[in-house]
Image (tube, rainbow, N blue to C red):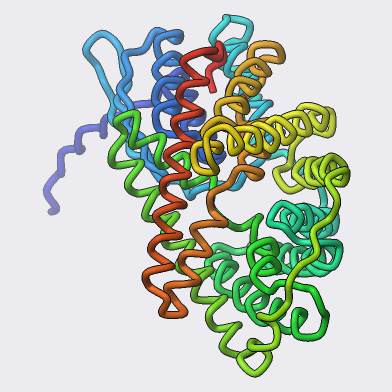
Length: 415
């Protein structure tokens, strides 16, 4: 006869995560998906946790965050990993409105969770074909800003569209997305000297930097410096290393492309651009603003504000260069842009990055940094290091201007 086996004790039920904690975690993942800087990420989640009656501690990194949440002595600790997301200003604005409504008590926890999920699941505002075209339209004005003429604008528009096509095709999967920078750098590094070899009065350097301007990580450089300045050393260092790797990937691609175009390089370097007259700057800035609306997936109604930010950044920098010199002039341009962006946030209750990011594309020090890397690859170490140091100095001046603007006019929104 078999022995009777006593029944095993019932397994304890798995503890369910309270909805308030789930909302904080979902918001944290959404913030990371749109690249919110660490200090704003932690501050916004701390305010949300307090509003929901939770005790919360947060530690943000570019691709993950730690959260300790709970109440009445019972805390849960979470590690959430999420890939670094793309820029999507329209979804970021929607997320800002949801966050503010939650903090003001106009949304319940359940309603906020539904809205956050709907925002993340919504399709992109602009299609791939228009995005590819706007990569070209956004690159062409950079040729003018770097001293090029109409020839550089036309060729850069083609190069930028090719870069956009590369980004769209390779950006569909995580594995191939890592190839966007070296592949785009190789294409532009080869085609820029080839175009300058075939056309007179065309500078291959202007074509190269302007053709890749949309991919240059100038914003990431500024965000990383901002995180370091605000004491978020781990996040700032990680983002700074990521920025350096992007520069290296682009530089490797450009060096390979120029190597393939070596027979054409000597003649191509003889091209001297013919700058456009001054009256073309405002239409060029408008063209850039229209392209940035699509590239950064903003709302079309933001176009006037984005255009105003580009004008403030460009002419603020130009006037600053006259008064203080080119390096400090960028700081003045950043200060004016930061003031305008913070005032926009107060008036429209929208994230300041909606106007700040397009304006930074006009101020971006990435062009200087990339030129320094190009000199180093060509074994012109002294010139390359000097140019790279200038880019770092420009980034610090830019960051100082933004910090002063934030101290002068503080935004009242969460993000």
